[in-house]
Amino acid sequence: MTRASGISVPLFSLVTRDSWGIGEFPDLAVFSRWAAEAGQALVQILPVMELPEPERSPYSALSSFALDPTYISLPRVPDFEAIGGEHLFEAEDRLALDEIQRSSRVLYSEVRRLKHRWLRRAWERFARLEIARGTPRARVFDGFCRREAWWLDDYAAYRAARASQENRAWWEWPEGLRTGTDAVLAEIGGALPAEVGYRKYLQWIADGQWAEARRLAWPTRVFGDLPFMISGNSADVWRHQDQFRLDATVGAPPDAFAEDGQDWGLPPWRWQVLHDTDYQWMRQRARRHADLFDGFRIDHLVGLYRAWVRPLDKTQQPFFDPPEEPEQQALGEMLVRIFKDSGAEVIAEDLGTVPTFVRESLTALGVPGFRVMRWERHWDEPDEPAIDPLAYPELSVATTGTHDIDPLAVESEPGQVEQALLDLQRSGSYLALLPLQDAFGWTDRINTPSVVNDVNWTWRVPRPVDEWSAWPEAVTRQSHLRTLTREARR
Image (tube, rainbow, N blue to C red):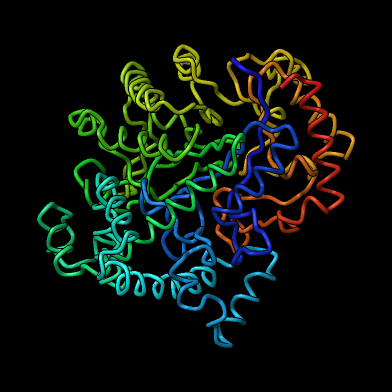
């Protein structure tokens, strides 16, 4: 395996001077160029699939396939510029844009409100002047819709129906819409053609900007993050209701993060039904992520082997599904193979309470798990000494932290942080993955599990990324990381 080093960071954090209050698709390319000069071979981001209002957690998407239009850069949308762009803004919109750009954190509701108002106007212009006239751009759009119909049709119908029902959850829709059958899809297409078209248009624009960002990011590879599950209020569950349990949620059993365990509010799948469909939904998710990314992290790997199911009926106790180890291993290995067979490079988040057989299974499958340095210790020895990173197996991903824990600088002195960076790079792991906060010694945290507040998932870099070439701190960090990486032969 080729030794390499990378940076992990959420896309929403990577703002530039042109961003509308949130890191956008083109901003990924700007950051990737800085990372490449810092000796980093890849950038790994959190999920970028579409979130519902008012959700902020990237792990609660309303689709496993649709990119979030919130990451679209409006000034790079031809139809927005054609109607006047920001020059057309009245006082209210100018104030809104100024507020979201000046904020030190992502103001999701305000960003979404402003962007969708102008994306809607851009679509109306495109429909009136491009689609109606059958222009070359309209034909390109039509080609995208036909090429991506295998996921786009379901998604666009769901979004159109959701909009017609004031964004209520699908189980609150009229009975005729709730079923999500082929007939209902056709009915929605006939009744709401403009709304269906708008949702497809957003995905076409997002797809183009994403593809361009990846092209400009080269030679830096872009890794994504495949969530273990999907929100119950999603296009996926609406269309495939028989494949999910709607009488329970999944979460995590009690551990160091939460003594009562965690409830993520996501519906467990009915694994026997998935088996009977040859795991089609999982295969489609693998295909989509392989289309979008050079590689991806499988989130909450142990959940593929056994889900911690919490019945909505609180008189019933939580349980693992499947319940027995042989079934768990067979299921998990089947799903991991599906993701590996996608053609993308796969790494797996195997943290938390993970049975020994799961990690042994992962190794046998040739998929790297994670080694979080502060947790890699000889727990059965006196004083629990740290394991020398040189001893980490080659088939692993070494990292100083995750988006769910405090950065190193919160609990370490500057000298200790620098030593950790050195130890990370010289580790035996084939991939050293460094959270951006630890690269700079920043103390900002991305998320605190089991906590709902106004801070989680809102962190932005303290200075626009397109200014980093002239920012002494970023220039110094870039040079230092490049030296560490080169000396570690990554």
